[in-house]
Length: 238
Image 1 (spheres, rainbow, N blue to C red):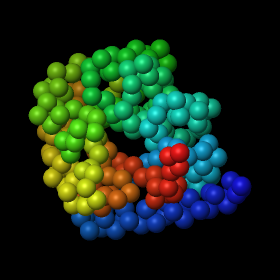
Image 2 (image 1 turned 135 degrees about the vertical axis):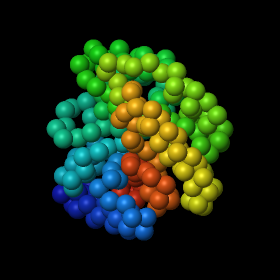
Image 3 (image 1 turned 45 degrees about the vertical axis):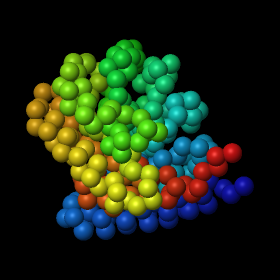
Image 4 (image 1 turned 180 degrees about the horizontal axis):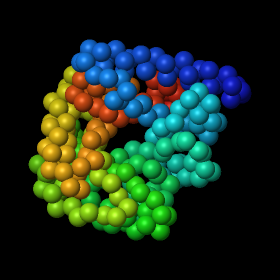
């Protein structure tokens, strides 16, 4: 087994390559690289990888499953922000709100009510993003595009929840360019809601783009790039 120090050096080199891709993509569309935050997606990787990543300078982590996130992040990790990026089952809503700093996959008012109650109990403020199924694939979670605006406009204010923006997953076609239209649509919806102000005054974020399509995502306005494979390597699904 390799040491934490050795693994940290590997992850640091991998992350540097991703950051260079982000910088090049930003330069191409005349964006400030500081406007794009890299989320290190540690799902299905061991706790030792999280520790090595922190040693390598990571501060933003993404986990898909609440139980896995609890195993890795129940111990306080100063300076670390945890993003729950996968769909959250209703029986995990309270646990998700208590452990996460951000939840990217909100698509119901019932979830928001649970998140509010748990955040209030924990004396914290939870940042949330609303997931939209821009690829219109049956296997993807999230709000349908036709329902997004009406759903958002129906939302009440919550004391312990900040509405921060939108999230989506690109088209699973093998061609990143196929995701551009959906990403652009998401940016336009984000802009329209932010313009309304009020409870959407902090609606600034777009969580779009992963290892294979981050360049397209940045060109279309992404502020949160979720990268796992290009940093941590292939996952063991067995």
